[in-house]
Structure formats: structure tokens, C-alpha cells
Amino acid sequence: MKIQLMSIAVALAFAAGAAQAQNTSARQVKNADQDRIEAEYKAAKERCDTMQGNAKDVCQKEAKGKEKVAKAELDAKTNPSAANQRKVQEAKADVAYDVAKERCEDKKGNDKDVCEKDAKATHERAKADIKRADAKPTSAGAGSTK
Image (cartoon, rainbow, N blue to C red; front, side):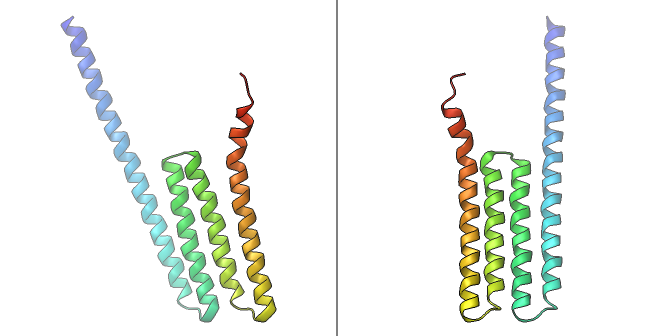
């Protein structure tokens, strides 16, 4: 009986050590990914510094947007869930909208108004698609009797 208890204690100790090592490794990978995302953002932002006017503003929006999407994707990777996947899709839609609006700044008068309305309509469609995708699993499973 004592040998069995001792064996169980040793097995639990090894399991706890392995779990701790796995958590540390996962944390290190996440930290490395966060550092990579930050470095990519800084490099992209530096490339924007050579530009002028609205081209620089568009470049900065794109750089910031890529960082935002990358962070959302990292969260979804490290903590997979439907909510985090939705956040990735929302981040992509928001970034596309922000960049499109910034590009409209180059236009004047009616062309600018049309550009902004198109950007907004595209953004609203993307948001509606995200909501529709969220609603599908629950509506499909609601009528099931299995």
C-alpha cells in the first residue's frame, strides 16, 4: 500500500512539473509573438516616416491596423473561442474601414462623400456578416432534437 501511495505521489509530482513546464513554454511563445508583433509595427511605422501627407496617414493606419489584427489573432490562438474568433473578424472589418476612410481624405467634394459612404456601407456589411455568422450555429442547433 505504501509503495502504491509513493508511486502515485511521484507520478503526480512529475505531472505537475510537466504541466508547469508546458505553461512556461506557452507563456514564452506568447511573449515572443507579442514581441514580434510589436517589432513589425515599429518597422512598418518607420517606413511611414519617409512618406508625406495623406500617404503617410494611410500608411500609419495600415501599420496600426495590422498590429491590432495580429494581437486579436494571437489572443484567438492562445485562447481559442468563438468570441475571440469574432474579435479577429471585427478587428479586420474595423481596420479596413479606418484605412478606407483615410484614403477618402485624398478626394474632394462629391467623390470624397461617395468614398466615405462606400467605406461605411462596406463596414456595415462586414459587421452584419459577422453577426449572421454568430447567429448560424445557435439557429441551426435550436431546432435539433438529437
